[in-house]
Image 1 (tube, rainbow, N blue to C red):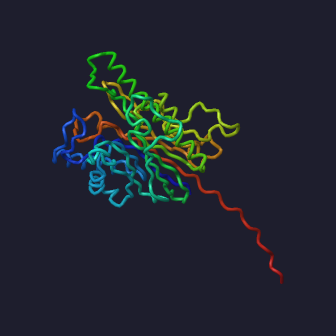
Image 2: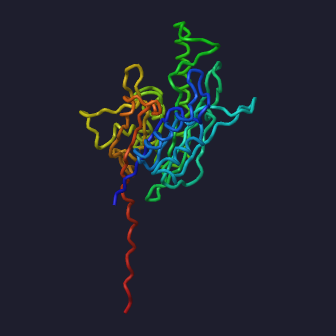
Image 3: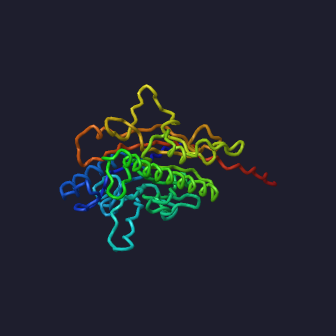
Length: 338
């Protein structure tokens, strides 16, 4: 029998402990605000009801464990993630957003965080942390119900927030433009580094793959298509190998007349910057398909509501159907000798 499994991506928006100062322009959460955010986030997880969820903007794993304790569906789920390493100079804990993964399916081994860029990817001089991701991608090997293993990566690429230097602000149009360019360069370099990681994983062994993430850009953006491997010709007969596909574009149940998918609202513009990408093994156009994308749902009603505890991102929920495993060849019976 075919089996359905569900994957989701969820930017929870600045999940931190109460009193933690995250940004200069953002007041720390009060105890009451924290409690409200924990409850809302737990309820949203339960509404997703996915087998595997990738999360972004986790400032505290302790806060995330608190969320799971308030959930009715994920109290016993496997949680993968890492608190940021302390500052090497001061020894103080760094308050930087990280990614995490929740799974109700078993894992084949410990999750891995990729802190440093692979060879061939580096930021130009003038940028901080030239050789590493701002938010390290998280890789877990998830065991599907039919015992096949799928590689799941949770990512969060650099935002479009201007990267100011030396106290610059948007008062000066040129400095503002340069700050935006620095953000774009970092996001683009992270996309190249992620593509290099994915290519290295292909060389090590070919498995189905799912990317859950906040790309901070649309599916058509250059940075996103770099991650997807679009445009690479590939080997004859293997044109889809190594590529990733937008689950929304290949879903079987897509209704183009009722498409209302968006995950972010900025200055009145409705955009989708959170994506679930799948490898050719979930694209029915591939001869190597082991399943297919049935449908994609966007949970975004809260973006139009005035709830300070809610995330400023919608969630993307993808339902996949696994094809049955091929039956082993039958062994001819040996006739008995009378």
